[in-house]
Image 1 (tube, helix red, strand yellow):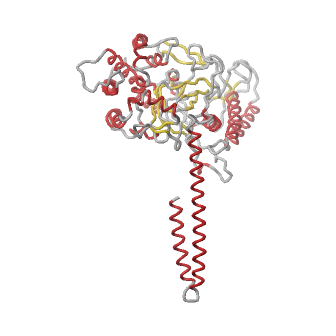
Image 2 (image 1 turned 180 degrees about the horizontal axis):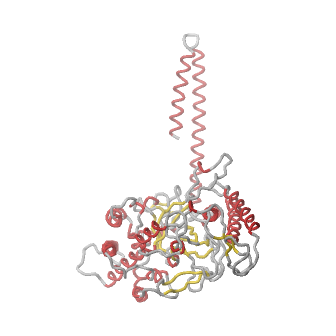
Image 3 (image 1 turned 135 degrees about the vertical axis):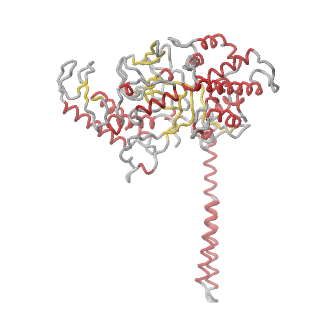
Length: 550
């Protein structure tokens, strides 16, 4: 508004100069006075209109604030944040669908495979994070508890300027739990603990905040809860694996892989840093009164409760390193991606309009092994993860996720080196074993077709007859159907963007899903069409459901 006033003042001065030039001499003095009177009236009317616009804007802000203070955003305003419900959850692992079978291997531990044929787009899991931490750079615009994007409608913490909340319930949850113990100490964490984990590497600002996750895992539960469950938690600490489901997410958390059996110079340094972090947080909890009283003086020994919590802090840290997942949100499509008609331009092969806003630990999701050519896609709603089948998964096939390096973009040596450094294992997924070609090395269209006879998994590379069931196939007809499905997907993609209405997005997302599912049934192998088809399907999921910052 002040800019408008400055603009009006400049305009008035310019007009006055022009009037003086126009009405020079005695003859023009009277006309000049009349013109100035008219100018003053115009300016007065302009200021009245400006004040009315300012008042209208203030009323709009007040109305939004009143709606916002009704605790949470109403469903009609954010239908993409509505959590889906599993229609048939797994009996032992209720965060998974019963289409997921959790099995056991002596060398692999627990992993997941399809209990039946799974359709593309089917929801396989819905899991809330046991603990999660928002990135520091996201705190000014997101709720610290549920990770909602709230750039304008915020409830600040009463005691610090770092944390904001979307509702009174989120604020109360934080103040009664974890934030009461970290409030005012975040800068110390970043200066001391953050630097230890960054180890001088470039891009350290985006490093995972393992220490924040560890402290929140403890501080979000009262000491009375840990004392009540001490025996069962200690027993889980002694177990390496479990073949069955467990009673609580904290028990499952302690059964996650920690690689404590691997001894190396790297692991010794890691354990030293994690031990320092655990001691740092234990001292924080003592000073904050977590154990019942505020212990400001350092004592020569720790109490039984303090020793137990210290052990848990260290245990959570060593598991977080290998079992932490990024929490993402969709970002707005830039103007450069649209044509003159407002439709998306031709697809980019690596488009991925998301950003990471924090990290979370999901014990059930962590049971899915990595594959460089995975078959699920994850969407976050707040700090809850929803797991979709991104391909058709046949009964008995392993259900896999991806830690980051994908076979279509990154060569096998780079992928395996990255996984070895970050997760301490040699990747033996099918993409690495068979050395799948990257996107630019694949042909444009698929040439391996699937047998269309029911319950037959035969593949035809050049043949006209299935090598398994001997059924004759019309390759030309299959190829024409693939082309039709692909053209339909590309046409729908033009309408799948951040500026589209929700009705439009849902309609075209459904079209993409059906045609992508059909392509999966018609062909197999490696091609640019298959890779881009999956990317477009990811886009449809991301726009239909999940966090957004627009």
